[in-house]
Image (cartoon, rainbow, N blue to C red):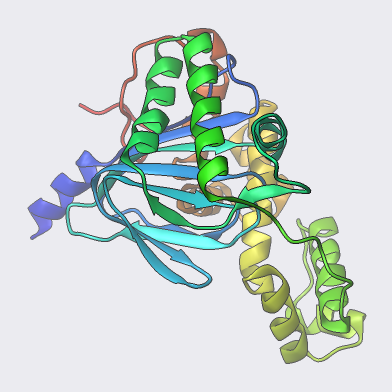
Length: 299
């Protein structure tokens, strides 16, 4: 059993990167077996296509099973988690287009008004799944014209078939206002946050009332939201060239190992590998070398 697990671990690999030829887009291509994604959300969209195996994606409404031939579409700020749905894990290609990029495509190709998004989380659509993988291939080959073109065709196709106008924010009830204030305080004091009891006292509510309001507003409790926010801030620092140990301290993690653990469970690669990919945009057309989930090249 131990030998089998070690073999599975070596079979995990991932590349999370940006291609300068398509601004506003992050890309992840990976194979995961034992890796699981902690509950988190994204500022932009998620478009994923599984090639082999099954990925179980845990959404607010329940768990969906992403398998070959399906496309997963997750709107901004929707909390979700993920793990392998079968013992052999899953391999997939995922696109993370920014909200601005999707809005521009929607404005040009659809009649959607307001903020465009997706009405469904998973659809059977092998052709669009192939397009998602084709974006990766074109970017890895350094073909900006093809990568940008195929991305726009894929997003326009999904918006036309499965798009909707996301609901406008309703006036906030008292609980939602309390949750928003709590979120702002946690964001401001990320490096040295208050306890739940202290936070509730500052806002004039009980701890359980704050927990309920926060989870209703953001789909996760305050401590989970804070971890997600810390990782987002760490990503920006790493992209600016901040060493991982300094980034860990700046966002409030105890040390770099804590950053490594939480970062990997949310982003899919460790912070060192994430930073290395963004430090060499001139190599965007280099051949794709799968890297183990710990960031090292496969041997």
